[in-house]
Image (cartoon, rainbow, N blue to C red; front, side, top):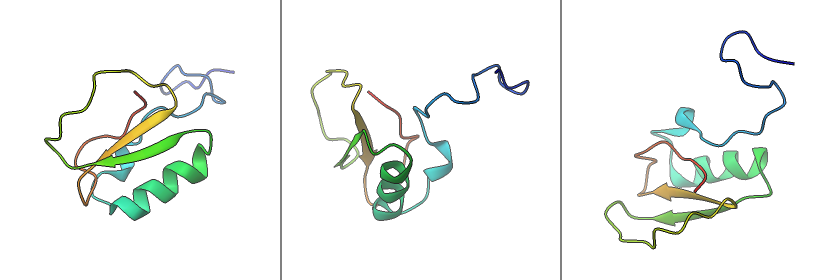
Length: 73
C-alpha cells in the first residue's frame, strides 16, 4: 500500500533519519538500532576521511551530535 504523502510503501524500511540531527550520538545510535537492528552504526568525527565503499548494512554518524542526516551507505 502506498502512502499518499510521499509515494513510498508504508512498510518500507527507513534508510535515513533526518529527525535525529541535533541529538547526541548515544541517542541517535539507540534510535537507529531500535528501528533497524540489522544495521551497524559507526561513529566518525566530521572531516575524517573514510573509504568510499558503500555498505548497505552501515549507518555513519558524524561527531558528538549528529551534524548530517544519518543514511545508509
